[in-house]
Length: 222
Image 1 (cartoon, rainbow, N blue to C red):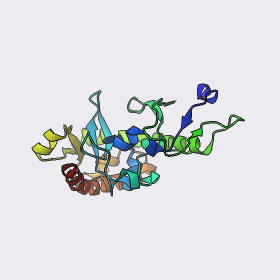
Image 2: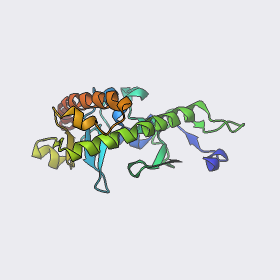
Image 3: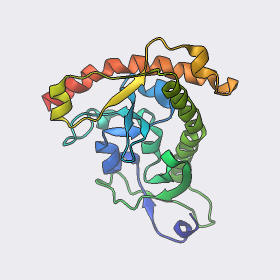
Image 4: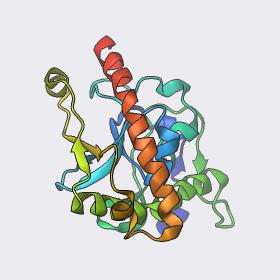
């Protein structure tokens, strides 16, 4: 961040960047699942390291933009996409050092903004993006603890999709918590003040699966 303070690097509206427009699987925290559930299935999938990662499925077709992306409000984006081009070094590994992706905007919807003003203070656009990163980081440990409990007690099940759809769009395996887990076992290792977040997540995840049919329809119509 000190290096950026002396640079003329501009940042843009998140919708100016290609990953926001096209990324199929965006990592999410358990706390944002309820906001995203009306638009995206919330599932675990294996990342490049083979670890289970909680993601929002935004699209099935890797060749097309996310359907409806140009009418979506900023609040409808996963937190990590709201924050782009700011990002963590490796959130999955617990490395929350903040850096800046040097990707150029795919389309400049506005003139952009500097990160710092002349006095070295964060400008509002950068501050908003960094707040999204902080919110994601704050909830990440809850998600990891919930996943470990679900794995330990056998409370995960695969999301069953038609084989033709899986093959056509090169989809990985997706996992979700079973519909009626033992809540006491699932929550026993979580701090009590996070139980409500976890229970809201379980409800949101189950409801979000109804959006899979809409994603299939969009992909097949493209």
